[in-house]
Length: 166
Image (cartoon, rainbow, N blue to C red; front, side, top):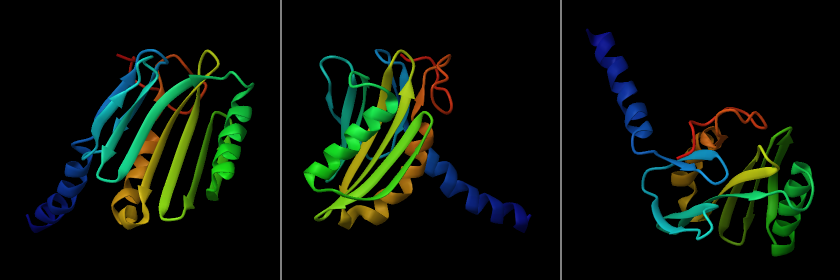
């Protein structure tokens, strides 16, 4: 019985953590992502390409776009160059077929950008930007955000699949 209670004690925080994550599915581009607890909708794009959420000073932007400048790799390179031009110090960069992650700092801000390839020459992204003072609170969210960003069923351009977009 004590072993059961011990396991239950450690399972409850994980279950509570999973609760409160709200799914967002984008019908226009066919992707989904889970929004962390505490983030509230600030704005939805008029053209249906994504949303912006906030939690205090933290901002989560989720969107998709057509690849108008070339390939997926070109899109990632373009995003990287834009961050460098803005003055971001990119300390983490990983890229594979169908996905990329960029992370860095600018003055007192931290940025994490995940981008995945979608079908029909498109890409979906999330960017989590927050002040360094929120690092302990925000850093644990990134792994679940990364795993939750996925294309709609039937699109195999990136890892995983999402439920049908709504």
